[in-house]
Length: 157
Image 1 (cartoon, rainbow, N blue to C red):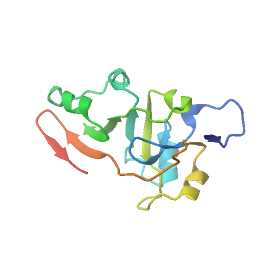
Image 2: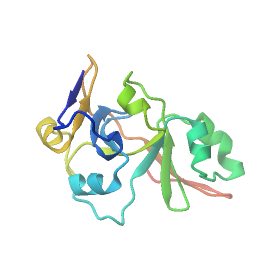
Image 3: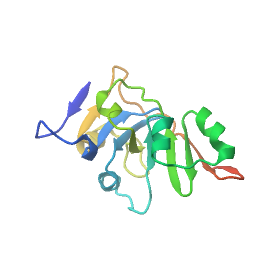
Image 4: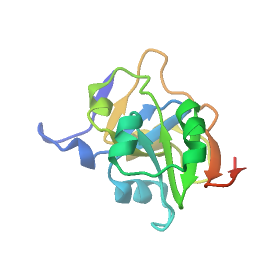
């Protein structure tokens, strides 16, 4: 099911905020970092996780992964990595939605108010598009978070 709160028929998907089930938990997805910051009432200096559709998109974005960590990044599932203060994750899209598959990458954040749990009414007010399947939206565990460089790996979450 796709629900769109949009006045015009031709809208830019790149500026909209989508509420969907991600590979880990329910989340806001968008290419507009400013709108996500406003929804989450978060400082603009705090970056969002950039979720790539596949490894080719990661490579096209010229993200450099240290050679010693490339195997770990390729084989990881539900894991976010931080390299040079930039957080990213490669996640296969679990929902069969053309809206989400249209972009090679999106910024992602959990769908909740800061420091609170998932509240569907809050999310429906703040989002432009809702994408869900018959399982519906559920709050799962967040992804593991690792800070990596050439020499070491440090687990943050």
